[in-house]
Image 1 (spheres, rainbow, N blue to C red):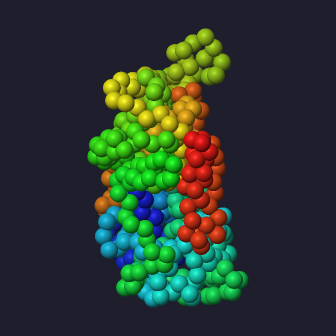
Image 2 (cartoon, rainbow, N blue to C red):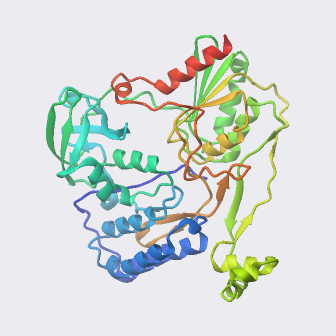
Image 3 (tube, one colour):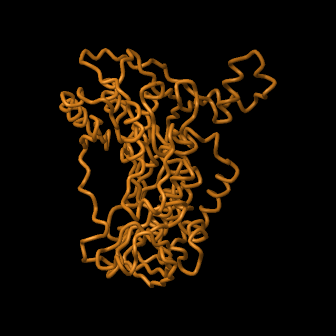
Amino acid sequence: MKKILLMLLLPLTLLAQSNKLTKADKIYGLSKFWQEVNYNFVYLNKVDRAKWDSTYKALIVSIPETKTDYEYYLELQRFCAMLKDGHTNIYMPAGKDFEPMNTMFGDYRFFIENVEDKAIITRVNLSKKNEIPVGSEVIAVNGKPTAQYVAEHVSPYISSSTDYVLMDWSISKLLQGVEGSQFEIKIKKPNGQLLTLNLTHKRTEEKEVFPAFPAESALLDFKWYPNNVAYVALNSFGDEKIDSLFTAKLPELYKAKAIIVDLRNNGGGSTGIGSYILKYLTNDSLLYGSRYSTRQLNSAFKAWGHYTTAKDTANSEWNKKALLTFQDNYFYHFDYNPLKNKLAEKRIVVPTALLIGHNTASAAEDFLIYADNQKHMTKIGRNSFGSTGQPYLFDLPGGGSARVCTKKDTYPDGREFVGYGVKPDIEVIPIVKDFMANKDTTLNTAIDYLNKKIK
């Protein structure tokens, strides 16, 4: 369950010139991906198979005619996005022909985020902070309202399990493209004034931005707030070093009357790394994590299923398995065993706020599943990423690669969170004014909540 890393290259003008792939290469790469999805994609039963196959057939004709390798990979990304899964992706090859630019436009540099379902500029290069104030909204791109432009030119290339993450990424990658890509954008400033800019992707030499970037997050961040409220940010479960960093803080954490565990920037890693930390935060001797299942193909059963009807499955597990296998819908359910917590060290069981958001993903979501029944823990923030699983990674022609999710995870009782996200107990949705004031409303809500608990 690796941290999700996406390369989404979405310009209107395709400026990369490389076209080294042959037509046969392009058809092979397309077919390889289509084949691996059909064999291994765990959520194939949620896919419109007729549309999936008809799109494949149409691409067999059109994709060999793509003018560049870059355009070819864009078409693969569009095809992949039909599956609506955050752990199933097409990755572009490395190299200058595929290098994306997102925030730099020569004299201008700005960062765009989804705030209140709007494309809000949340940072600019320092010299432009008065011309383009933080909180300004991009209301049109290349002559189209931003929402229309996103729907037509950005979202169709992004693989996501949830609509809200799809929108987050679409807006943050709104102006992404290779160097030289051009955009005309219309901006509405906080005071209502309109500004039109013609932009071309070019490296920005000015390094300073406003507001300044916070200090680079460590693997684990630790600080204190008043009333002995400890703050611990677990920013990745991709490096087991975080476990030792956490245990090194135990002598201090034992003094805490309440704890904030910030998972908002944790994109995943290894489930075992996160659960090791959780063991210290509960008195339970058993921790109940996700249930796993995967599709199972038995070729002989698939052959028998061709001649099997629903009526034949009555009182026959054999026929039931045959029919389900023929329908690509037979699942193997892994043995389920709760995680034993035999920790000898002292535990820290105090009012605990788990800060979560749209970037809380994969193994960090597995952490939340383990923590689901902890009565002293309260989830605060926004829905989590809504995607986890075990991807199967394979190469594509020209140096690119793909991955296909092979494992379905649910709550122990079967509730689904992939496609929905783990929901907070207390929802906090940032607004434009928060960004303009550089205010962390989610953290402030957690501090206020815990202070009431410990009084």
